[in-house]
Image: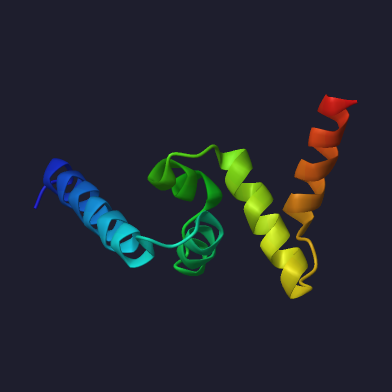
Length: 89
């Protein structure tokens, strides 16, 4: 298998995985969809693309979910939150 064939196969597998994940969250509320997809290991940008939302919208939902669970913020979240606050100031 050459590099091009590998890339094509990899892209097809990614598509299949995304379709299976979307099927798993079908009919659920957005918050639940985001929680499930995140638990599957998808990143906010990937979840946003799958659900037709913005990455920032997904990050906000994930942030609120972590707050509800009492989980501490990650360093990445803290940096993003500060940057967003500075933009809105």
